Structures are given as C-alpha cells and as structure tokens.
Amino acid sequence: MRAIGLMCLACALFACLDTTAKYLAVVAELPMGQIVWMRYLGQFLGMVLAFGLLAVPRLLRTQKLKAQIVRSFLLLTSTACNFLALRHLRLDQTTTIGFLTPLTVAVLAGPILGEWIGWRRAVAIVVGFSGVVIALRPGFGEIHPAFLFAFASMVSYAFFSLLTRHLAPYDSAEVTLFYSLLAGTFLAAPFALVQWVWPDGALGWALLISTGFYGGLGHYLFILAHRYAPASTVVPFIYITLITHSAGGYLVFGQLPDRWTLMGAATVVLSGLYLLHRERLTARAAAVEITAKATPNR
Image (cartoon, rainbow, N blue to C red; front, side, top):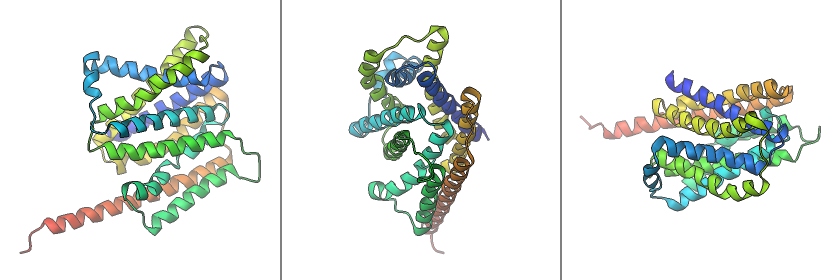
C-alpha cells in the first residue's frame, strides 16, 4: 500500500508539472526553452542541495558514461517535445499517447535487449496502438501537427526507459537520476537565456521554479515506489495519470476529454494491463523453472 500510494502521488506531481508547463506557455506566454531549462535547473539544484556539493563527484562516477549521456539527451528530447505538444493539445490527449510507452518498450526490447515477445503480447500491442487511432480519428477531423511532438516525446521516453533498464545493474539510482538532468541543465541553458522573458511577479517565478520541484520529487517518489514493491504491482497505477491530468486540464483550463479520447485511452490501458499480466506470468514460469533446476533430485 505504501508503494501504491507513492506511485499515485508521483502521478499527481507529474500532472502538476504538465499543467504548470502548459499554463506558463499558453497563459503566461513564456518561451518554451525557458520553461524546459527551469524544469531541469530546479531539479539539478535540488539534488545538489539534498546530497551536498561534495557528493557531486560521487554522483558522476558511472560505469556506462556513453549510455548515461545518451539517456540524458533522450529525457531532454522527451520533455521538450511533450511541452511543445502541451502548448496546443489537451492534457488528456498527450497522456493517452504517453500510454503507448510500455507497448513501444515491449516492441523495442526484442532487437535492443533481446527480450522478444510472443504472439499474445504482439496482439495486445496492435490493439493498444489502435486505441490511439480511435482517440485521433484520422480522416474524421483535423489532426493538429502537435500530435507529432507528443509521439516524438513518447518514442524518446521509450528509448529512455530501455536505457534505464540497461543501466540498472551498473549504476545506482542516484547516479542515473543525476545524469538524467545534465543535458537539460546545461544544453538547454543557451536557448533559455537567448529567449529569456522575465516572469510576471512572484506568482510567475513561483510557477516557473515549481516545475523543477514537481519533476524532481515526482521522479524520486517513482523510484521509491519501486523499492517498496515490484514493478508488476505499482506500474498499473501509472494509468491514473489520465485522471490526474484530466483534473488539471479541467481545473486550470476548463478542458475535459471527449468520448473518443476516453474510448481510445481505455483501449490502450487495457492492452497495457494485459501486457503486464503476460510479463508477470512469464516471470513466474521462469522462477518456477529456476527453482526446479536448483532442487536436487532425491
């Protein structure tokens, strides 16, 4: 229950992050580069304060430097594309496309990690992608180009997740979390400073700084949830982001998901849950096989 609570709280913080980013871009009319940079700078400074300046050399020690750098680039790309999509799309729309991440990871895990899927999971993935087709309804209405940014964000995050799994046996969670901030903190800085617009009053500054707080604390609670329970227990609760993001869209912008988005999201969620169920069965069968091999014959 503690892990589930932490996961739900992390999802709520991610909703606050996306809602705040959309508000700063659409209502406050701040440049996107500035919003992206402050999101990473705030979390970077928060980690330095939490661990201490003397801990930075330890956080930079990695066994997979190239993989960590690529992973950091992927997270920056995902965040930037997501914020660009949020400028024009509803929060529930970007969330629905984001639900494709675990399905995309399952497809890419075969050629990249050697974790090939069976036909049942392949069917679930096809059904999941059809859910996004339901939500977008191509041919029945105008599809905003911003959906391309949402898809690019999802694909970048899928590769980011694969690299996270690859790095888990080599580096600690703190090192991987610290490296994930470097590209956004330092590479986004020139774009932010060139485009810089001073926020309007204390509220503008508070909202801008809060993006780093929401992102940093959300990712920390996400990692903490996985320490208290296995992924198969906590991952399904990621789908409550449809509720949290829809609530943020309604409370701040007066936007509600339409029936097509809800139908498409439901299809993607059910496909993702089935995929998780199949992975759990596979892991259980593997554990039984290992136990049987380890048990001596009598």
